[in-house]
Amino acid sequence: MNKDQVVNEIKALAAKYFSEYNFKTKYKVPLMSRSYNEEEIAEVVDTLLTPEKVTLNASGELKTEKFENLWANFIGVKNGVMVNSGSSANLVAIYALTNPTINNRLIVGDEVILPALNWSTCVSPLYAAGLKPVFVDVNSNEYGVDVNQVRDAIGPKTKAIMAVHLLGFPVDMDSIMTIAKENNLFVIEDCCEAHGAEYKGSKVGSFGDISTFSFYLSHHITTIEGGMIMSNNDNLSDLIRIIRSQGVMRNVKNIDYKNKINSKYPDIDSRFLFVNTGYNFRPTEMEGAFGLVQFNRFESYFKLREKNAEFFTRKLNKFSEFIQLPIITDNSRPAWFAYPIMLKENSPFTAKELVSFLEEKGIETRPIMSGDYTRHPVANIYDNRIFGDLKNTKFIHDNAFFIGVHPGLRDEEKKR
Image 1: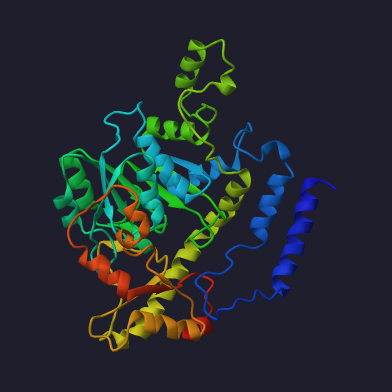
Image 2: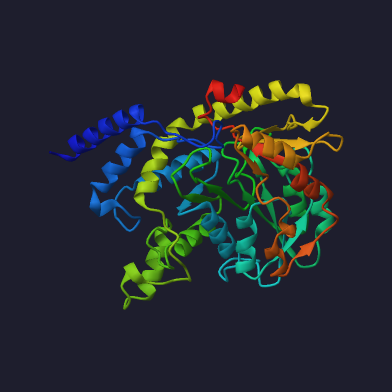
């Protein structure tokens, strides 16, 4: 048998398996569902059957690089650098901005402003690099950072803003970029839950100095694990490629730079010439293969999430006296990572009571990511600064949760 025959046979078997197998879950309405089929399996098998091309260390055309280019073009930036997770994407982005080779780099003790309502991997890279998080409040409409709070929180050590497009709702990037320009600050966009979301017609992830995405299993498209770092800065992107791969230049795009460094150190094997510090944050070619197939489905997945969100808004609107539904501004097109539900102050029941009721009825729920990060024990371990009273963040922490809005939701599940 040749490779194509093996791939096609496995593809057919996988299709039969998926058509017959009952993917049971303890939930009748799950937060997520299987979002891949025999197409992804076939692409991965094709990769595995080419053993000389299963990692980024291989030569020639790589599926991961093809996926990087597709995603970069889609977001509207020059460079995409894939890593092994969205968490790693944030970590590598911060390491790059603290590297001695860049201008105006972040140094130990510098402050980064970000919303207190976040996911933990927005904060952990800051601590790892010796930076000081400054937690500010969010607005209560779209769960994004309050830009007025950002402006007021700037201090003498502030060097960057992290704009987190939480749950797929775009942050007011015009204001963020204006504040950053006025104060000479880096802007990091965490888009790990906002694939394809738009602010004033432009994709989130295309505004800041650097942006990050996650392709974890529950996200808009998946490579099972995986993430990507985006930037229009070619030199910064090459630095990210170096950090991603243990400090060597294997995947650097600037050929002139490669040749210059290699000629300067002729006594060192160019394949193993360490030009900077680095780690192994590389994805495998299997993740790149998965991404290629998923990318072709992205538009349909995105529209299904929108359709499901519209359904929930329409059905839940009759309870708007007690429930605050998502408010979408004219400037934004959310990516609907999930469907948030927030109880108003006059609600006759608590969020905990409603969550307990829904879970008993087979509807899976989840808190709004980390909730108020400053209330977690980890916030007492490392140095940080809390600006203001975090009124909205605290209210969301106590009164909001989300349900699934993924494209795998069936009509009977939505109606339930």
